[in-house]
Image (cartoon, rainbow, N blue to C red):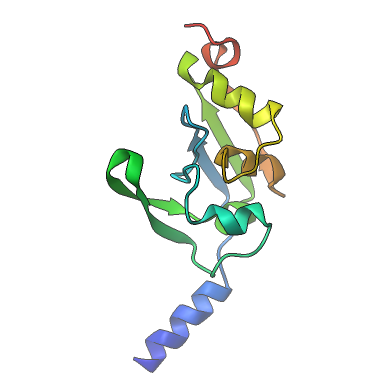
Length: 132
């Protein structure tokens, strides 16, 4: 038991830097299953480190389900993050990500704007212009 505990602590301390993370964005501004008002966003909004987890299970009450997500801290360590935004239903979310000063707790995809690694946005015309 003690050896496993020590291994878990060492693995948390030595979090990996993922080479590439491909993400989507929802119409509500969520990304990586980090939803508005979600529990992992408070630390992200305050630019604080989280509790060392690379991933976490999060409840999504609006969908009556649980999802597994990378933590904001894991996203900060990624070498490259590639958000893919497609569909006219994502237009308003995209405008809010780039055009508002709302906090990450309200528009989680805004955390992608401050990542230290490379971020390359892939946006289709429907999402950009709000038309199919």
